[in-house]
Amino acid sequence: TGTITDLGTTTKLTTTGTAVIDIDQVDLANNILTVDASAMTAGGLKVAAGNDASFSFTGGAGDDQLSTGAVVTKVTDAGAGTDTLVVTDTTHITATSGKLYKNFEKVTAVATASNIIVDLDQLATNNTIAAVTINQAGAFDATVSNLSATAAANVTIMNAAPTTAGTDIITIGVKGANTALQIDTVKAALTTTKSDGTAQAINLTGLTLAGVEKLELTGNGTAAATTGAVT
Image (cartoon, rainbow, N blue to C red; front, side, top):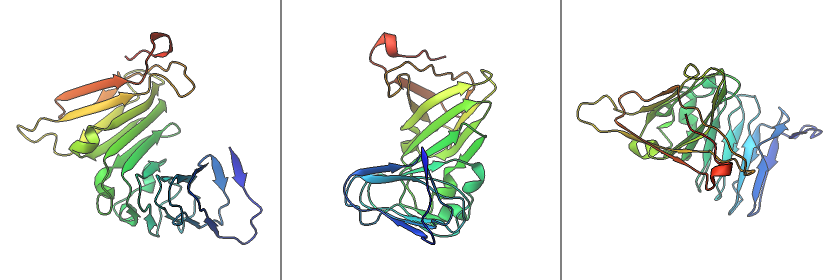
């Protein structure tokens, strides 16, 4: 982690090249209103937006990742590649601001500091969301609604660690799931082994799937000693 400061009156950050540049854990100075990765021909930029509504982002040909920081008022275009929008606050995506995000293919909903609600219909105008990741921990609820059948088949639960089992809820809503005779399926990959090789338990006792007929779960662990339990 860190902070990019001492940039004077600079308001734009530009990245180039073909590598993955990960500054997602770095706090951008609030005067950085524009991040431009359009010249990147591969790799991708991972960055967290500042908290100014005038912030804008332009992605390149790589797989970019943007974490939200405010209710934006300017266009944010992820460009080519397979790009991820990380939603860190329920208020950041609205029916209006959602239309300003373009060319994102994945959404991550983060409920580790507050409840999170993400309605994919609010992003549908200029994005085709094909995969969803949920990160839930503590006394917080995570809700993602209006998943397409494609997105519902590509869910990742990277963490599910409720403070009180069964009461801190993960809700996954599939679009049209209550339609008569429609068979809906959610396929979720569980991070039962963390990137450092240690086991991680996944607690799904608070999982809610309204109108969904089938649930398929798979863990990423390959050895019993490093695979967490699923409850």
